[in-house]
Image 1 (tube, rainbow, N blue to C red):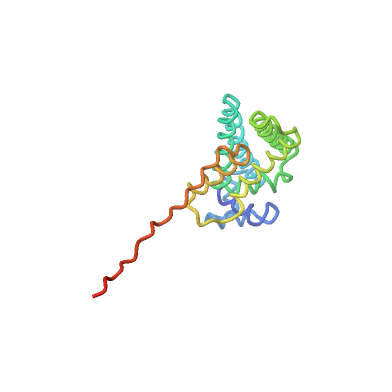
Image 2 (cartoon, rainbow, N blue to C red):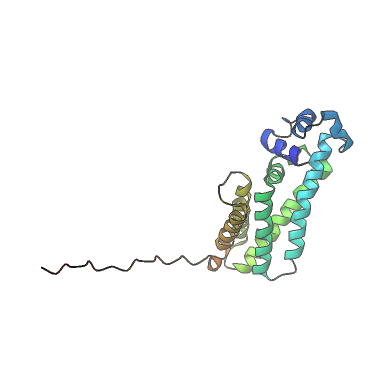
Amino acid sequence: MEAALKLFAQRGYDGTGIEDIGQAVKISGPAIYRHFASKEEILITAFEGAGTEMVDAFDRSRQLEPLEALAVMVRSHASMAVNQGPWVHMWLRERHHLPRRWSESTRKLQLNYLAWFAEVIGRLRPELSPLEREEMAHAVIGMLNSGAFYRSAMPVPDRIEFLIRHAMALVVPSTAEPKPSIERRPRTRRSVRSPS
Protein backbone atom coordinates (compact mmCIF):
# COMPACT_ATOMS: atom_id res chain seq x y z
CA MET A 1 0.00 0.00 0.00
CA GLU A 2 2.73 2.47 0.98
CA ALA A 3 4.69 1.77 -2.21
CA ALA A 4 1.57 2.18 -4.34
CA LEU A 5 0.69 5.48 -2.67
CA LYS A 6 4.17 6.87 -3.30
CA LEU A 7 4.01 5.86 -6.95
CA PHE A 8 0.52 7.30 -7.38
CA ALA A 9 1.78 10.57 -5.86
CA GLN A 10 4.87 10.66 -8.10
CA ARG A 11 3.46 9.37 -11.39
CA GLY A 12 -0.30 9.63 -10.98
CA TYR A 13 -2.77 6.77 -10.94
CA ASP A 14 -2.81 6.36 -14.72
CA GLY A 15 0.97 6.46 -14.91
CA THR A 16 1.43 3.62 -12.41
CA GLY A 17 1.04 -0.03 -13.36
CA ILE A 18 0.75 -3.16 -11.24
CA GLU A 19 4.25 -4.16 -12.43
CA ASP A 20 5.60 -0.83 -11.12
CA ILE A 21 4.07 -1.47 -7.70
CA GLY A 22 5.44 -5.02 -7.63
CA GLN A 23 8.91 -3.83 -8.61
CA ALA A 24 8.85 -1.22 -5.82
CA VAL A 25 8.31 -3.97 -3.21
CA LYS A 26 10.54 -6.52 -4.97
CA ILE A 27 7.82 -8.97 -6.01
CA SER A 28 6.22 -9.68 -9.36
CA GLY A 29 3.29 -7.53 -10.47
CA PRO A 30 0.82 -10.45 -10.49
CA ALA A 31 1.78 -11.24 -6.87
CA ILE A 32 0.04 -7.99 -5.92
CA TYR A 33 -3.25 -9.72 -6.72
CA ARG A 34 -2.80 -11.94 -3.68
CA HIS A 35 -3.43 -8.83 -1.59
CA PHE A 36 -5.65 -6.63 -3.78
CA ALA A 37 -8.09 -7.57 -6.51
CA SER A 38 -7.06 -4.62 -8.69
CA LYS A 39 -5.20 -1.32 -8.80
CA GLU A 40 -8.55 0.36 -8.24
CA GLU A 41 -8.98 -1.56 -4.96
CA ILE A 42 -5.62 -0.19 -3.76
CA LEU A 43 -6.87 3.32 -4.47
CA ILE A 44 -10.20 2.70 -2.69
CA THR A 45 -8.43 1.24 0.35
CA ALA A 46 -6.13 4.25 0.50
CA PHE A 47 -9.06 6.66 0.34
CA GLU A 48 -10.81 4.74 3.10
CA GLY A 49 -7.73 5.12 5.29
CA ALA A 50 -7.44 8.85 4.67
CA GLY A 51 -11.18 9.26 5.18
CA THR A 52 -11.04 7.42 8.51
CA GLU A 53 -8.46 9.89 9.85
CA MET A 54 -10.59 12.84 8.77
CA VAL A 55 -13.75 11.35 10.28
CA ASP A 56 -11.98 10.56 13.57
CA ALA A 57 -10.75 14.14 13.93
CA PHE A 58 -14.18 15.44 12.89
CA ASP A 59 -15.96 13.29 15.50
CA ARG A 60 -13.55 14.10 18.33
CA SER A 61 -13.65 17.83 17.65
CA ARG A 62 -17.46 18.02 17.70
CA GLN A 63 -17.46 17.27 21.43
CA LEU A 64 -15.12 20.18 22.26
CA GLU A 65 -15.18 23.93 22.73
CA PRO A 66 -14.32 25.86 19.54
CA LEU A 67 -10.64 26.57 20.28
CA GLU A 68 -10.00 22.97 21.33
CA ALA A 69 -11.96 21.72 18.32
CA LEU A 70 -9.84 23.80 15.97
CA ALA A 71 -6.66 22.53 17.66
CA VAL A 72 -7.74 18.88 17.19
CA MET A 73 -8.60 19.40 13.52
CA VAL A 74 -5.40 21.33 12.79
CA ARG A 75 -3.14 18.85 14.60
CA SER A 76 -4.73 15.86 12.89
CA HIS A 77 -4.47 17.44 9.44
CA ALA A 78 -0.89 18.66 9.94
CA SER A 79 0.22 15.20 11.10
CA MET A 80 -1.49 13.52 8.15
CA ALA A 81 0.02 15.95 5.63
CA VAL A 82 3.59 15.63 6.90
CA ASN A 83 3.60 11.93 7.80
CA GLN A 84 1.36 10.64 5.01
CA GLY A 85 2.00 13.03 2.15
CA PRO A 86 1.11 10.54 -0.61
CA TRP A 87 -2.40 10.18 0.87
CA VAL A 88 -2.88 13.94 0.63
CA HIS A 89 -1.64 13.88 -2.97
CA MET A 90 -4.17 11.20 -3.79
CA TRP A 91 -7.00 12.86 -1.91
CA LEU A 92 -6.50 16.04 -3.93
CA ARG A 93 -5.53 14.64 -7.31
CA GLU A 94 -6.83 11.12 -7.87
CA ARG A 95 -10.40 11.18 -6.58
CA HIS A 96 -11.81 11.15 -10.12
CA HIS A 97 -10.43 7.61 -10.60
CA LEU A 98 -12.68 6.19 -7.89
CA PRO A 99 -15.89 4.35 -8.81
CA ARG A 100 -18.85 6.73 -8.70
CA ARG A 101 -20.22 5.64 -5.32
CA TRP A 102 -16.81 6.08 -3.71
CA SER A 103 -16.18 9.36 -5.49
CA GLU A 104 -19.49 10.77 -4.28
CA SER A 105 -18.94 9.65 -0.69
CA THR A 106 -15.42 11.10 -0.52
CA ARG A 107 -16.67 14.37 -2.02
CA LYS A 108 -19.42 14.52 0.60
CA LEU A 109 -16.87 13.85 3.35
CA GLN A 110 -14.61 16.59 2.01
CA LEU A 111 -17.48 19.11 1.92
CA ASN A 112 -18.60 18.21 5.47
CA TYR A 113 -15.01 18.51 6.69
CA LEU A 114 -14.63 21.95 5.12
CA ALA A 115 -18.03 23.08 6.43
CA TRP A 116 -17.09 22.04 9.99
CA PHE A 117 -13.77 23.88 9.76
CA ALA A 118 -15.67 26.99 8.63
CA GLU A 119 -18.23 26.60 11.43
CA VAL A 120 -15.53 26.35 14.10
CA ILE A 121 -13.80 29.40 12.63
CA GLY A 122 -17.12 31.25 12.73
CA ARG A 123 -17.56 30.47 16.42
CA LEU A 124 -14.10 31.84 17.13
CA ARG A 125 -14.38 34.77 14.73
CA PRO A 126 -18.05 35.85 14.73
CA GLU A 127 -17.17 39.10 12.96
CA LEU A 128 -16.39 37.15 9.77
CA SER A 129 -19.09 36.67 7.16
CA PRO A 130 -19.98 33.11 6.06
CA LEU A 131 -17.95 33.60 2.88
CA GLU A 132 -14.96 34.85 4.83
CA ARG A 133 -15.15 31.87 7.18
CA GLU A 134 -15.15 29.47 4.24
CA GLU A 135 -12.26 31.34 2.64
CA MET A 136 -10.26 31.10 5.87
CA ALA A 137 -11.06 27.38 6.16
CA HIS A 138 -9.64 26.87 2.66
CA ALA A 139 -6.56 28.91 3.61
CA VAL A 140 -5.91 26.89 6.77
CA ILE A 141 -6.39 23.54 5.03
CA GLY A 142 -4.22 24.69 2.12
CA MET A 143 -1.46 25.73 4.52
CA LEU A 144 -1.58 22.36 6.25
CA ASN A 145 -1.67 20.45 2.94
CA SER A 146 1.52 22.23 1.91
CA GLY A 147 3.34 19.89 4.31
CA ALA A 148 2.73 17.08 1.81
CA PHE A 149 4.12 18.89 -1.23
CA TYR A 150 7.66 19.91 -0.40
CA ARG A 151 10.71 18.46 1.25
CA SER A 152 12.03 20.12 4.32
CA ALA A 153 15.23 19.87 6.32
CA MET A 154 13.21 20.64 9.44
CA PRO A 155 12.75 17.59 11.72
CA VAL A 156 9.28 16.06 11.34
CA PRO A 157 8.00 16.84 14.88
CA ASP A 158 9.20 20.46 14.61
CA ARG A 159 7.67 20.79 11.18
CA ILE A 160 4.28 19.56 12.39
CA GLU A 161 4.36 21.93 15.37
CA PHE A 162 5.39 24.82 13.10
CA LEU A 163 2.42 24.19 10.78
CA ILE A 164 0.03 23.84 13.73
CA ARG A 165 1.22 27.04 15.39
CA HIS A 166 0.89 29.15 12.26
CA ALA A 167 -2.41 27.64 11.13
CA MET A 168 -3.89 28.33 14.56
CA ALA A 169 -2.50 31.88 14.52
CA LEU A 170 -4.13 32.51 11.14
CA VAL A 171 -7.54 31.96 12.75
CA VAL A 172 -6.84 33.21 16.26
CA PRO A 173 -3.86 35.58 16.27
CA SER A 174 -3.64 35.44 20.07
CA THR A 175 -2.46 31.81 19.81
CA ALA A 176 0.75 32.89 18.07
CA GLU A 177 3.92 32.57 20.08
CA PRO A 178 5.23 35.87 21.38
CA LYS A 179 8.27 37.08 19.51
CA PRO A 180 11.41 36.53 21.51
CA SER A 181 12.97 39.73 22.69
CA ILE A 182 16.29 40.57 21.12
CA GLU A 183 18.97 40.26 23.71
CA ARG A 184 21.48 43.05 23.55
CA ARG A 185 24.96 42.39 24.71
CA PRO A 186 26.01 44.64 27.55
CA ARG A 187 28.53 47.21 26.47
CA THR A 188 31.93 46.59 27.90
CA ARG A 189 34.15 49.43 28.82
CA ARG A 190 37.43 49.52 27.08
CA SER A 191 40.29 49.34 29.45
CA VAL A 192 42.17 52.58 29.50
CA ARG A 193 45.82 52.29 30.06
CA SER A 194 47.11 54.64 32.63
CA PRO A 195 49.98 56.72 31.36
CA SER A 196 53.24 55.34 32.61
